[in-house]
Length: 161
Image (tube, rainbow, N blue to C red; front, side, top):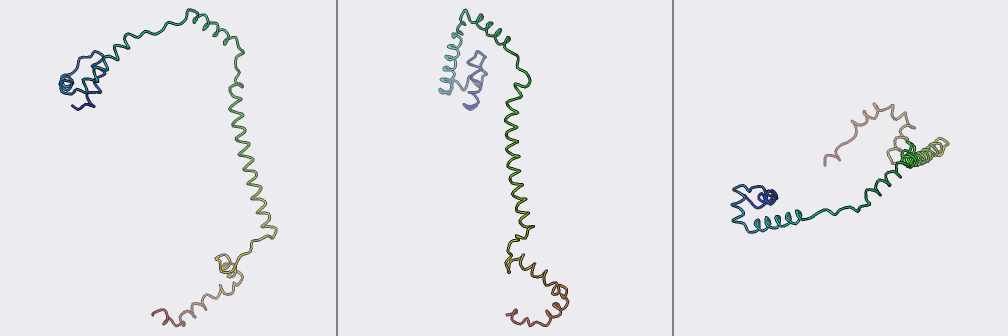
C-alpha cells in the first residue's frame, strides 16, 4: 500500500480502532506516516481534554425574556414578507415595459416615415437597385426566349483561351 491509502486509515487508527496488518507493516517501514499518526493521536488527546465553557447563569433568563418579546411583537402579515420582493419585481417589469415601449415607438416612427415617402435612396449597381431596374423594365423580363436565342450566336472563342 502507498502512503495515500494509509493516510485515509490513520484517522481511524488514531481514534482507537485496531490497525489492519497492512497498515502496521507500512507504519514500521515509513517514518512520515508514523509521525503523522503520532501527531493525530496528540491532537485527539488535546481534544479529549477540552471542555466547553459553561454559559452564564443568566443566559436562560435573558433568552426566555427575548423569546417573550419576540412573541409579543405584532405578527407579520402575509403582506409584510410579500411586499419587498414585489416592489423589486414590479420595478423591473416597469423598467422592461418602458424600454420596450420606447423601442416600439421608435420602430413605428421609422415605419411611418417610410410610408410617408421618405424612402431611402437605392443606388444602381447594388442588388436591390438592380432588382428595381429589372422590375421597371418588365418587357426585358418577358423576352427571355429572345435573349436565349441570342446567347447561341455569341462568339465564345475568347473564353477558351
